Amino acid sequence: MNEQSPRKRPAKPYRRPKKDPVRILAFEALRAVDERDAYANLVLPPLLRKAREKEGFEPRDAALATELVYGTLRRQGTYDAIIAACIDRPLREVDPPVLDVLSLGAHQLLGTRIPPHAAVSATVELARVVLGDGRAKFVNAVLRRITAHDLDGWLEKVAPPYEDDPEAHLAVVHSHPRWIVSALWDALGGGRAGIEDLLEADNERPEVTLVARPGRATTEELLAVLGEDSALPGRWSPHAVRLAEGGEPGALEAVREGRAGVQDEGSQLVALALADVPLDGPDTRWLDGCAGPGGKAALLGALAAERGAALLASEKQPHRARLVERALAGNPGPYQVIAADGTRPPWREGSFDRVLVDVPCTGLGALRRRPEARWRRRPEDVPGFAPLQRDLLREALRAVRVGGVVGYATCSPHPAETKAVVDDVLKREGVSAEWIDARPHMQGVPALGDGPDVQLWPHLHGTDAMYLALLRRTG
Image (cartoon, rainbow, N blue to C red; front, side, top):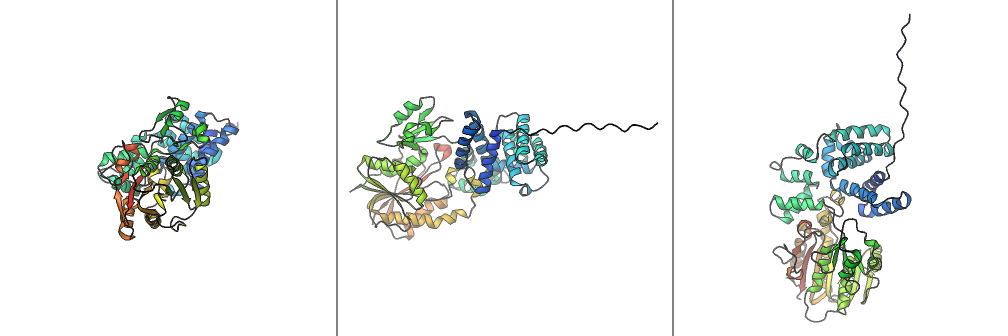
């Protein structure tokens, strides 16, 4: 009697992957950041608007998508180290889309309160949709290895001991490139506690801060409209209002009308300090020499209008000059916006009483707002900006009259982009100028250092790391 061959189990029917609009949107945002060198703060809003219109996104969906994108970008260095410990090939050999999905999954497992089984399941479903079933199996295997430890457990395994290599340890634990850790530590000075506080502040979601433009809106007006549960007064600027998490600036009539705008409090303090310096003689002609995209120009224009002064806002790039025009529209006082190169200016020497130059820089002071910038910048970028920064400051000192004041500002705390630029210009360029102590012109702001220049910090002041030097032309 012949033995019967064993029956084959019937194959499981193929199940189509479930499409999760929130995670698909987050993946699309990360791919745009990676493929097009886009910035998340520019990519994400239109994706969210489209999702609200077509997918019926609710506020909680938008909040989760935003957290997945920004959280993944901020902790990318940490997650890369953990993922590398869970695979059997160099990280550079993993296709970028696969790595984006893995990073999204790692953030859900290690950086959110999403239950591990839900984080793995949702990420594998995403992988099936955007990568295919084959690569989804690889994603599933890696994520299950990641579930073996929580974040602290993984950091003990993948971060070099602090005692052996402090900068490498901080780079992995706080997800910053090592060279940026070194540069920030040099700028900040002090021991371990301060630099850890700073790096951690870079990984926190920044508040949205509004400015009530003088003569056009008041903080009282904005606070009354928003309500005490949705907004608080600024910490330092008398014109600042801080929105609670999830607040939408565009919903405010004052913002839509241009009477108020979104502006970091550090940026406000720079403009206010320049305007606060007393002058002998006329005070009727102000210049913003690097005005795009227009936040400081709009505040300066409003302050100038209160004193009967006129503002000239100059921006080299025409498309950014149009943004400045939009920001200044409706300003109560006289102003003009031009597209001009501040290193080859069309104005005559000594034409202005006050001049601000917020120069292009590496942007290391705004890493909490643009977390992807930390992974794009390279050490050689710092000296790359130096000639332009020096040229702009030199021409600003020539543009101001004798006795007038220049504010040199930059959103970077790197020593080579701040005091070194000012010192070099004052020594070499033959323009006589003296330092003004900027600290008294930021009244009430603590921890401003020894002066005469000022460096603001996210962990100390809740602002971007803005730098300001005030100079008076003497001859």
